[in-house]
Image (cartoon, rainbow over the protein chains, first blue to last red):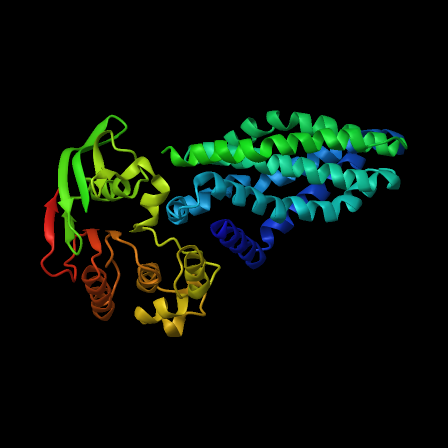
Length: 219
Length: 196
């Protein structure tokens, strides 16, 4: 547990020293959301109808951006070897990395959700549901993505392979997340959908780090 | 006591080495020598548990060393070619992370390698020799029985090699073992040579 805290603290410190990664993900998210109004034209209702799915898709794509460097930088500078020899177990290393990824990219996206929601003409009463859905969906992606990043580590085209591997698995998160936001926008209960999304996160929480850990150990 | 029995390693289709047996007693130092590509770094990675041997066994005090990988990792320090430093963190922060894992004091360890004045500088502005010294300072943090060193003196000046010599001597005097791959003379008196 001491190792987990040390690694997480170090990842946070690195993220604060290099805020560009978080900023890039947030700007990417807002920009993708801003593209939709231009594509749809003068039809606010159509835009509002698209908003839940567009928010989820933009959020997941933005969170995917820094994933291919999640283990790459550590593998290149020798840190990964030291982490694997730190005695904390490869799965714990992967869990710390996943949590750090969510804190550094997923969490900042929540702050930008109202901006993106406004651009997509999302009803204001659906904003809290949108933030909850995005928070859970990005957590799911952080976990899946950590396993994907560990698997594609060292692959020649890892950067391309990673989204192909991870995004299909993230489809359930898009379905439940968008359904929850849509329900909230229509004045219905978003809770059941968010709970299903939470169940996905709960299932991935032990499985993805174990898979990532196994992938990291195999060379 | 570390004992290798008939170790073999394969990378892809190529056999890097095979039938390798040796013993290291407490306080002993072994120099791994051999041409480039002879498998010195590979052997060190294998001994660290980062690679699985294709054949053979590694014994620690007579028991299989890889039966409990966490315990094996806990008794060794591995210094690879790469310095494992984050350019954005200072020397002290870089070392502080390992101090939290293993115990020990980052400031005192940096002091032992003559880096006290550079402790507050980000690793990105350090020279390659200074980075190597910060990596070596990891050895001074907390005791571990087995040191696996891959070209520890690359880029070091004479004074730093001498400091490393003191560190190695203290480690061996306390019953520590050293396996070092090198092309350069190392400050390891009466070290045994293992030619790959």
